[in-house]
Structures are given as structure tokens and as C-alpha cells.
Image (cartoon, rainbow, N blue to C red; front, side, top):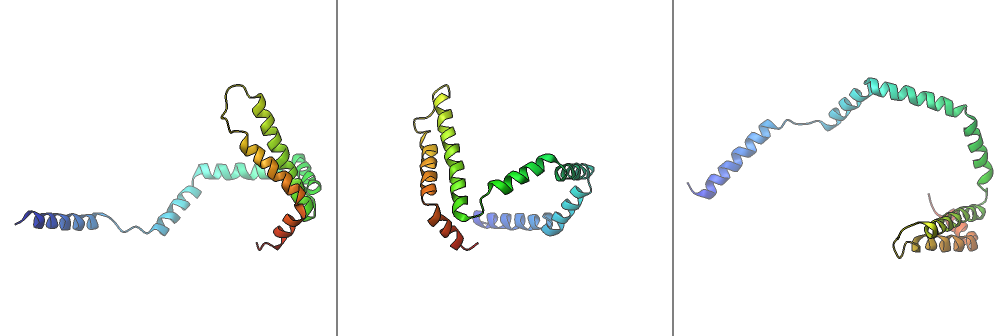
Length: 142
């Protein structure tokens, strides 16, 4: 027999043995079994109980009430006012980043100021053009 014929027989034998040795796997059933195993574990039960305790505490907490009140009062109702509020927050964050870079000890990259400066300039532009941006956001399909 020639060498190529032997290689073909060898590959055929290898493929036959591999197909016999590799079981057919039902991925969906395996996923369900793994999910059931995890859900029946004591660690999962402890995590669920802990989550329920924390959730109940959060629902009755004073902090949640304060956060909800601030959220209700801080988010403006109209589109243009919302755009201006978000842009103001971005401007403040970018300015704070630039100021922190000025007082950071050690060498930072030569262009580390570019991203916060670009964000601040973009946010200031959004404050100026809040009305058309709000109209564009309103016309956008969800």
C-alpha cells in the first residue's frame, strides 16, 4: 500500500473511533441540568435569602426614600431642560477631571487632557443647542 492510502485509512479509523467515543450532547438538557443543580445548591439558597433581606431593607430604608425624592426633583420634566442638566453634569465631571490631572503627582501622558476637554466642550455645545438636541431625541424611534 502506498503512504497516502495508509494515511487515508488512518484518518478514517480515527474519525470512526472519535464518533463512537464522543457522545451526542443535548445542550439544552445540559443547561437545564446545570441550572437545576445550581438552583438546588445551599449556596444559591443562601444568596437568595440574603438578597431578599437586602431587598426588604432597601424597600423600607430612609436612604431609598431620599434617593427617590432627589431623583424626582432633580430630573427636569422637559426634553431641553434634561439635555441641559445632563450636559451640566458632564461639564462638571470633565472640569473636575482636568483639575485633578493638574494636581496629580508624577508624569501623566502628554494628551491625557484631550478627552475631558473634548467632553467639556461637547457638553457646553449641548447646553447651547439643547432645544434642537431635545427635538432630535424626541423624534428618534425607540
